[in-house]
Image 1 (cartoon, rainbow, N blue to C red):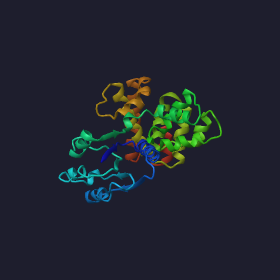
Image 2 (cartoon, rainbow, N blue to C red):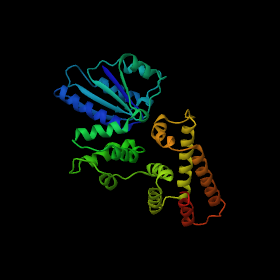
Image 3 (cartoon, rainbow, N blue to C red):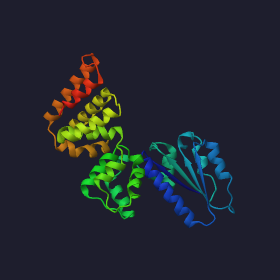
Image 4 (cartoon, rainbow, N blue to C red):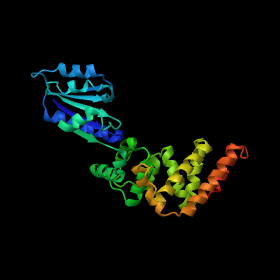
Length: 293
């Protein structure tokens, strides 16, 4: 029996890999079968193996989010199953390396890990466009990557929208029209433009206001973002996700610690005025945020 474990927090990439394996399996084995299962317990997994025999069609058994349901004392029985089938365990989170079942799979079978922090979004975009005979210039590639960086698990769907357009080159207009940044990305753009582009900062802020995003949430997110940039600037990144560091390093290089501290001080003052009732309306809050630039 062949066992494969695919795990990690990059759900989008894992789904693509599994889809590709399914296609390869069908092409390689005639009259083969593919079964999808989810959240199985140990006995159910064991029964999948017991159902097969040497004369049956070869199966690819995809078993999602089930590793945690296998007790420590039971896992060895899975490796004793006599079967020609492939057991593909798929976990949309990282399986701990100190688990006995992880070590056993690692020792005698195959493990593939897909983590967001290791994911190169720009290369992924370029590869997808290349496959669809699309082109994009470096400036627009950066724009698209910025819009998608906080929605990695939805990135492929968003890229596919652009691939379906009846045009070879993807333009800024295409991106603005078809790709909607999520809230975290809007905050990232807000922080970036706070120091670099007053017009774009005010436009992003106005968009958030139209979406009726609570101003205290925007302030807290901006404070978090500026503190993160300060840590990167001071090379104090041990507590930060490497993916966060990589995506914020370019902005951090362009700023001084003084710039960040001044902006942080203003934001903390606005937050204090809201909490103490000195700023009474949402309109006032947004006006104070406009005065940051």
